[in-house]
Image 1 (cartoon, rainbow, N blue to C red):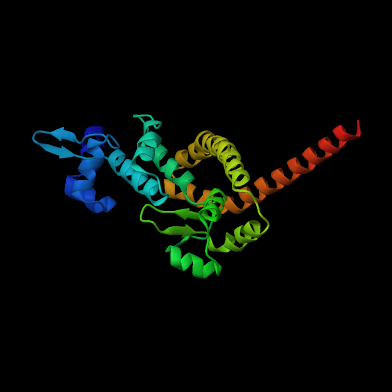
Image 2 (tube, one colour):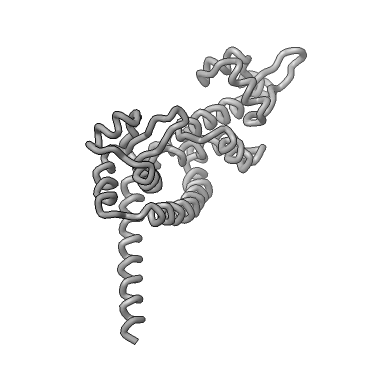
Length: 241
């Protein structure tokens, strides 16, 4: 089939694009103005959109569901090459999929105090936020990891210092970014090409990642425990000298 004809068949009108991604015309134009997606392709006086527009808008939506601010979304997208294919962009969406099955529960401050059976101080909330258990939203409410809440409260009862929680959060963030980058590179260079060559859609890779999550988390925990044991042995050996 002629490539130009095939390309024309992939073009979408603005209405078709908004129906595909579930966004309003106003939002699409806003994201285009902000540079989050490229401008439409002009055909005479009409503008048309490609699978690249669809993939980038879906990525914007995915980032929003993970709580990214507009500025953070801009920074994230700026690191994606302009010539990235829709499949490459879909890989970014795949790697963003949450690695915990439990979705956070949104609560008001009153509901949170009732749930914890205590009045949480600002320091308490700062510690729980650093631990990733209770996060304040823009609307003044809180996203709560309910299954971890009792663990966080136990640490508060033991006087776990906020400064230590914040420092630990920095450690997790620094090494988490490195792990995420290396895993993304691994899937991009070693896994996705094989699926792409076989004609598998990006959703197939997403399923693979979902199935790997429990094994990856278990491997990280095991690696952490082994490293901690080794660190303790080294510390004991140093003190014995």
